[in-house]
Length: 262
Ligand code: ADP
Ligand code: MG
Image (cartoon, rainbow, N blue to C red):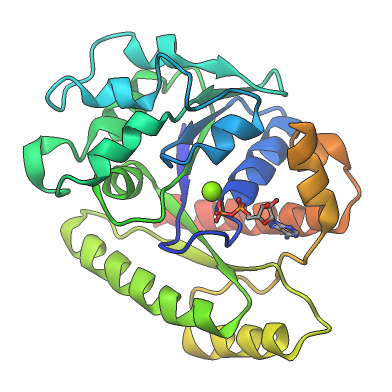
């Protein structure tokens, strides 16, 4: 299994959309995918038709065992999605209570990594949708993953937020055995606006080593797909958004080969 996390400390930048679009394209290629909703808002869980306010069991259950994960628990939590090859480890609102704890407290930092280790044979990929806060949950997402996708909305304020995210990553990378490679993905790009064009240029200037060369355009078909509860490629395989995510997937897979060789 390969584990990817999608993270940014800002909300509304396309994290959930990116997680689901990538999972859908991996499934389209025949890969078995587990998507993990670590955001207490539960957008990904809702996307796939499950209500995070009413679920009795969720990722929260994984955190109730003093940092250990009972055998078989992660598999029992899996829920179906719109795609037979994609299973969901759902969020619930209870996850928010974990965010108030310090990441270093109680040895809870590896719960997601341990949970995914139990699903290693069952899936080819895990895609983690991370919460916008640097707390226990984001620390778990980063610790579990081998590759990170950082969506950034193409507007000026977003770049400030990104600097904070990159500092967080540098801090975390100092504690990891292998540094976590990350790709910055410009999202919600609108070529008619100066803000989009200017931000894209700024991103490429400031983070040349990390910015993916493409961008995800504003595409209402992505919103329509979420309303329909289907992955973007299930909903409209030829939309501009899906074409862009296809190019992103290709990039991530090539990055993955590089890290495997290294
Ligand atoms: P986050 O998970 O970072 O909060 P979302 O993926 O939920 O962000 O996106 C926020 C909103 O913007 C959602 O309504 C989503 O459908 C919409 N959205 C995301 N990406 C695009 C895009 N490329 N084009 C149009 N709408 C988008
Ligand atoms: Mg989200």
